Length: 378
Image (cartoon, rainbow, N blue to C red; front, side, top):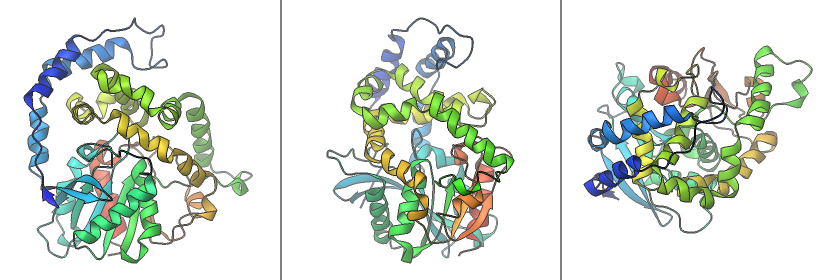
């Protein structure tokens, strides 16, 4: 383990601005909405702000205010934010992000989790970047799927000296955290997921609730209109990666479209995130050149996750589980569907607002749900 500090060369920031100014733009879309992807006018305006008004050094300073480590796990150097609570009896908690997220998603919640009004709710927060993401190393050979990452996280927590801990995850973090619960149950107090990965139960199809019908309709819509990115990244991450690593405008469009589609924003991502917040996350991908390496996690594991999603009763999780299912997230399993896979659900929350990037777009509710669950299992 070695201390780490982020210090991006100025030449990299100058190169980013130069590339943005020299973008070769396509013609505008032939529709008046986002149905063909990010509208030209919106992306040009956002990229102009990226080139002229965005300040990476602000985020860099914010990240460097949090203790950081580089830890070798399984032959890879993994970048970790490690924010210890001032309260010595705090419960260690490992937070795992997904795609197209990053450790940036958790910056609003680290303070409230480590130093809450009630010390009994305190956590020592461990926030690693997935292999191939952020300032973690990029795998150079196949094999770094969610199960291997989960095993690395178990080793990480042991090496940090945490014999008992909690885990939380969303997106890929849900799958990693679920696998972690299966591999390291003896050391886990419990896991919190947003959302759980659980298949719809065909036995309930004659007695569906309104919310379950909505969930099935959303899955059908996503399969037809929203899953193109997953098919590409799950089959040809290298091919799409050339454009995403070479063109900041392409990367910006690829990611900002998901901020709009997956957040509870009523069609306008800037009602949930500021432009700089979205660009913080996008710039992290750009400066670390991780668009290709992060996409490979789909090639490694998307079929495994789909298997879990269709055969959830044969792959159960038995540690205590808390679940937050936000109305604009996907999938949105019901509790009875999730209970087939997660056999010890202690906490279930269905907030009225919120989407996929729970800690990023709704940090107060995220913190409230995490605290509420772990109070039950500390």
